[in-house]
Image (cartoon, rainbow, N blue to C red; front, side, top):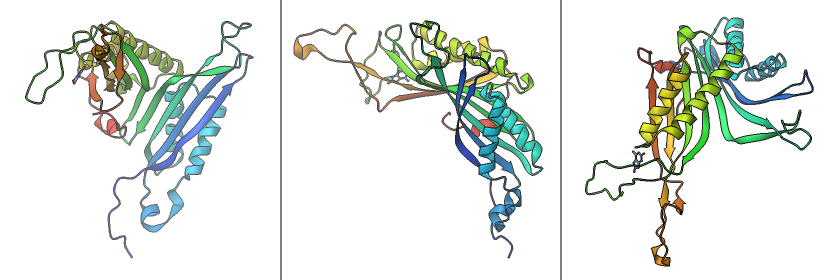
Length: 305
Ligand SMILES: O=c1[nH]c(=O)c2[nH]c(=O)[nH]c2[nH]1
């Protein structure tokens, strides 16, 4: 019996393959700690409509490929994902594209009395922040997105919020000196004509983009989180010419000055309560002039406007 309905867009693969690779060719080891997701697109209609698995590269095989490729080294997450993309689209005619994603967790060497520069093979996990990478391929293009998530930053002054419209529902007082705090999730897109970079170039670009956004957050006298965001995006584009666009999603972590007058105490900007919800959510993209929008790739990311 012919299938009664059309199959819509589909993709499949293995999500969140946890991978730790130790580079141990010298006594000074290096640890790469990632969670990798591989999803394939292509001709998988018969699998859905008829249960014919002839085209179904098993998700288990995709997971094993991640581990086998790690035996050769991981390098930058972007280059690791590009290797997976090349492998799956190059090995199976009917795989025309896919989505390969990584989250990378950073480990620092533990400084000890004997090794103040950091131990050779003992590490401590860095804060909550993660590095992210995403490769999206279809029959027309390969898009490389890199970024970070949960980079928590705070300024204890140098931030105000005034001049906003007031209506019958407005109670917020002008703030001419407030705490500005956020948890930055950012993704940046490499220009298609930058081509694939090598692993060290992706690593350098990551460090430069991260440093640029931190510098701009710190140095911008902020009139709103929106203005800080735009300054951070501009700094990333200034720092890394290969980046065409950067998108941010930044919750405004509100800090409220506590009224201490019931206790006969003043509070000159020193004691705050922190609310985790609701929170302002500030999202925007900052684009280089003339950059295309690459909407198809962004549509697969989610979490950004
Ligand atoms: O930086 C801010 N942007 C806003 O849009 C906003 N709205 C608000 O209530 N506080 C703030 N702060």
